[in-house]
Length: 339
Image (spheres, rainbow, N blue to C red):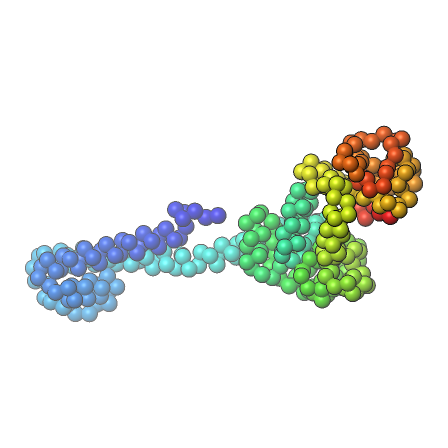
């Protein structure tokens, strides 16, 4: 961010202050020579602005001529400086924005295998933080300048435009991107973005947000690889906290959240699955559960219903009903442990 001391605003303030001092001092000098306040101020203004009207009073004395010469030299010089500062102040923001846009477009042009986040609302904001923590290269695409300014302040690469426009998606490098996240809070817009992105890149991974229950099938037909329903996820989380409060605590610790972030960079997920009373996994050993999953998951911790946590459980440890089992699995392949 440009400091005030290095900005056009500084020159503008200094120019205004200098001209104010010249006008005040010259006016007072003419008043001291016997002129009225109105005549003195009027004469000083037409002099510094080089209008060139005739003198209000004859300049017959050496003192009046000296004051006039000083007013002309200092006033005209000050006005030139002030005019330049004003033009600089007006155009600086536009030039800075232009250069910033060019720099952003240059950065985007060099990106490959990146993630495009369409929408920088509440979920987009959280998603950007997670992608940053995971070391992923991404850009924010939104049409609201205020949101883009906030994202730019956080150091994110941004692009202004409508994500439903294929030309804008082209500028975002959709053909070179590895994934696109549609997290706009509008289901119809997310469907249209998905259609446009899939049309431009058949291989891109598209994760879309859906609010209404009927939207999921539309997004999948439009080309989304996966659909995330924030309301559904929130309801599941609340139910887990109510039904299995001890199990839910495992994912709330800073240590487990940090571990989960690191695993996501490897295409893995850390999940805590509650074992319901009627689950087929209740009464099985850790080894039996892992064998039954055919290598798609590994049990890394068990939270007993009485509050005890067992880290790195042995293969012969028996999982009981209402336990919380922390597993590492490939994304989207969590075993159905809830009975």
